[in-house]
Picture 1 (spheres, rainbow, N blue to C red):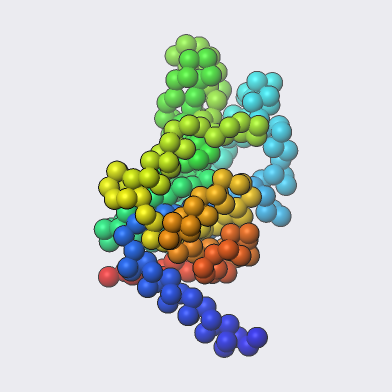
Picture 2: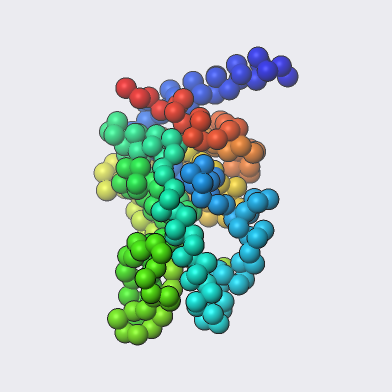
Amino acid sequence: MSDEKTTESLEAKLASVREWLNAAQNVMVITGAGVSAESGVPTFRTTDGLWRQFNPMEYATPEAFHQDPVKVWKWYDARRQGIVAAQPNPAHLMLARLEEQGKQVFIVTQNVDDLHERAGSKMVVHLHGSIWRLRCERDGNIVENREAPLSEMPPTCFCGEVMRPDIVWFGEELPWRPLQQIDEYLMEGVGGQGSGRIDVCLIIGTEASFGYIIELAVHAREHGAKLVDINPRLTDLGRMADVQLAGKAGELLPRIVNRE
């Protein structure tokens, strides 16, 4: 296939997605590590990802934390400092722009950073927790802590117990609150407004290696949503999407979102 034909094909896809978004009222967005990677936040499973450099069983399991909380916290403290230095990229900013245009935008992210919120998005559900929250396993107390670096290593609760990152680790179930928020959105829309019908579902920067991500996308499509997958590589979701856009979200979304 010639470069000219490839460009024409991409332009046609972008035009279709642009038209769908312009007409949409309710947009669901599913984001993964690829979105944050464009801001310089390391991914996990790519060839140069964190799990190629570090054994996840030593840093992302309850057992590892109980064995050596200082080791785990030093690793997360370094990640927190890296995230503080990162800035929202054009993909984050364009998703926030959709909200500014009056659309209901519901973001389900696998990322534990706050780049969506810093870009201006208001309805963001973190499936895997937040790196800025600390949780006490003794009394369940959850606090927000944005120190980077941490002033106390490891951080402790008022009760004296060592607190852990409020992040879903290997072997743990997803927290109930995000799942409840997603269920409410699917039934009632953002803030209980509307029927819950999704006009467009954008899947951005995720390999969709978790079954529940695929289930969300399938649910949206089965209920009438146009499914758009944005990823440099073809994924399982890309194969079932109405449109698969191969490339970086930070480069493609500004060409899709109406800026007027």
